[in-house]
Image 1 (cartoon, one colour):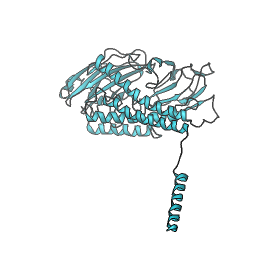
Image 2: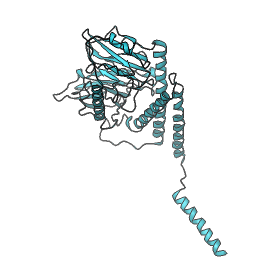
Image 3: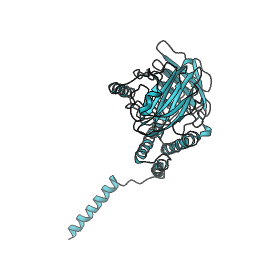
Image 4: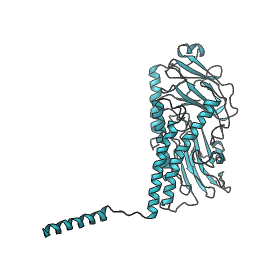
Length: 428
């Protein structure tokens, strides 16, 4: 009996020893603070869903599903952004918007780049403009969803025409508070982020050339290890920006499409977007909201303008660009046909009408559109939109309208899919 008790006692000692050696992990006060930060993050993520549920256009299960995918995409992008890409001391490029995180009529013709800055540091940006119609570089004092709108302003801007570009299309730009030799862009104390818009109308040209950004103030030094405070802030910022941005876009929808515009109407181009900051300083844009039955089309009639770049694109109610790889949901000045009278007529419909200038809604009965005119001698006026029956469309189009049969449409879509695959070969 005593032997059995000894054996049992020994087993208890062994089990307790194994527990304390392998499983017992007492938490310090600082660790508990990080644990609490993670718990707050989890609660914030749960609350993001309310921004989807309460959206005024969320009226069916497909829209709801797209909304939850939308905020999941944003959250995954902002987590990567804040944990790795939002440090102005050691900047890295972020592709935002990108093929996953689509936001606020993100432009399918624009392989965006962004990087963080601070006003008291000096940065060197290298780039190549060879295969882009135009490159614009804007310094902003904040980011939508992260910074109060009243505090977001354009600090400084530059267009590629003003850069000293060598025979290979390469340039070097210094960003700092004090003027530097060569190409220079001013930073001020509230400078927060640089957004580079690289407009490309020919999707076959997917070679972006060399792009590099370094902080000359910290170059050659190592980044510090993350602290409990910095990680807690990263988690909070990622969740907060996702929720705030979604709420802001819903507000924009209410203002633009419920108060200012009726369905199936398009606004005249506005050089300064009345609803959203961070618009390109060299661009004017028009907005519209389509609501179509299966047998209807929205015919948008636009005069040709003398611009370096123009485009039109469709978005779902969450203001995400549609699947522009697998659907012809966008056109630019290279891919759209201009008619003999100097106007471009776009046909928005759920079914293919067999014309070159078709904009495919990708199955959406409702959504929005955005048209852009960039670096123009004069922005166009006299834009019109009218709802027509698909079987009566031909009577509203010029006889020279370019036709596209199903085989040609499949070839066009296949080329778009291949081009987008090449664009994001290095990751989204």
